[in-house]
Image (cartoon, rainbow over all chains, first blue to last red; front, side, top):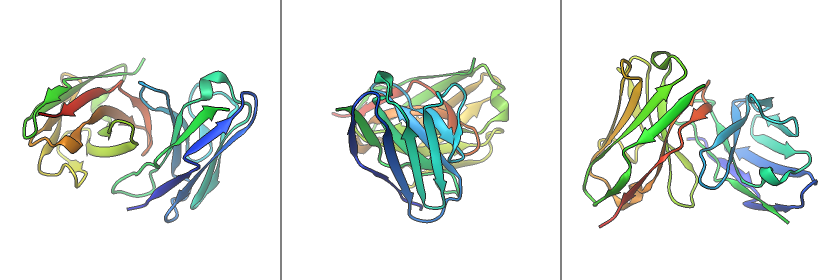
Length: 108
Length: 117
C-alpha cells in the first residue's frame, strides 16, 4: 500500500498571503494525485486532479504541481473561505487509493 | 446537477447492524462504479468499499472485509452499505463518492454512524 504523507500538519497563514502544502508518496504515483478541500461539517471537495488540473469551478488561485513522489498545492492569495483542511490522495494503483492525513490551514 | 444523498446512519450498539443508503441523481448511475469512504471523528479519510457499475464486482478494506457488504440497485439509482458486527472503531461519517478516474468528483454530505453502548 502506498503511504501518503502531508506536511505540515497545521499551517498558519495570513489572508492575502501564499500557502504551500506538501504531499509525499512512499513510491511513485506518477501524476495520479488529487487534492481535496474539506470545511467543518462538509464533505470533501475535489480541487485538483492529475496533479495539476483544476476541477470545475475551482478558482485559479489554487494550483497543483509535482510528479512521482513529491507534490505541492499552492494557494496564491488566501481568501477567508480557503481556511480548511486539505487532503491529498493517490490513484496510481489498486488497492486502495490512499489519502494523506491532512493539512489544516488556519488563519494567522 | 449531480447529487448524492446518504441516509441510514445513527446510534447502534457494538455487534449490531445498520444499512446505509446513497440516493444518486443528476447522472447515469448505472454507468459508474461507486465507493464508500469514511472519516472517524477528527480523523482523515479512509476508503471502505467499491462496487462496479453492474454490481457484480466488489472490494473491501481489510478492516471491514467479512462484515460489510456493498450493493446497488440501478433501477432505483441507489447504493447501499450493509454493516454487520459493528465495532466502536467503525464510528465515523460515511460518504458515498463517485469516482472520476480514481479521484472522486462528487461526494454525498455524509451520514454519521456511532457505535456505542
